[in-house]
Length: 453
Image (tube, rainbow, N blue to C red):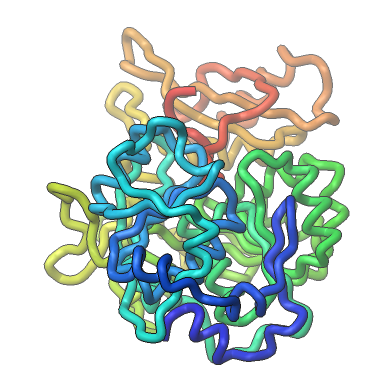
């Protein structure tokens, strides 16, 4: 059953809404509006590139195009024109759904276009399975395109359970990213109301808006939440459910959210664009219980050479493109590239295999060092990266954002942070230098930028 049909079959849409920073739309009206034969004919069975400016337009187009388009490739916000062109090429797009805020000028001049307002009214009496193509949300480089089915994308959602009365979802994520799309589908398959974020919206404004909308369930990356915790508008929120995903949720951020929202369920989830939703942890502790390794509820998780592997119906089908690398191994497992370490009856995330810093032949996971720095009093967030060194090749450098109450003696604070790290980290992992910065760069997917800026 396609997305629109599921919404219509669910019933109970009265009073439910989609809203963004500009408008509020009645969900029933979006789902049951008049269909346009010309738009339907233009899009039926086509490979469609969805490149619109805002999330409201993206949400309405996704509802209209699922079950109509043969493939739906989602273009996240703030992508460079060359990356948009890469998505169009890898998805073999035949037509683009866009609007005035969508494609930059002179981007993809040879690709036919249809205005998003027309696409909203597309819809056929018969349906096909639409392949969804999502861009990976790494911290650097051109995104890869991963093919999914709607069933796979919704595989981690309990669609049989009715939502709690009064549930209103929201997320810092963009719904064209995997994490945000999960929230969109949870709201649509509930069904429940959904408040959408905006790429250019200050954190304070977003918090004020979701508080006014009565949001009860809200998700973001740990970096999103660290920014929110620095905002004076955090007290506008009174959520029942707070969830983190996309980056390592260390004990510091989990404890800070527990202090901020003592009545809420605090959860951190493991998921990726390629591997789908793996598991959710709600015991308030960083890492995950070793008991989750093995087979359960249609998903199998294992650890090989300290790397997490996943096999389930929730994973992506394959990478798209002219000469894509293999996504799924011959045994059906996907190598997530996430390194873990068992400590007693619990596994802890160390970081991405691709992010290791080599200090004179010894390996350093930036996230491990950041976890130690982030618990130092007065530190809001940090980023650890390699600094070139003529003898060791590289040494560890830490960039740190301080809270307002951290104090003003920066020289003393730098020494104190390094002294704090020494008994907690091996010598080669201790930062050789600490720099204080006002902000740290965050990708459009809500993750710390690991290279470049």
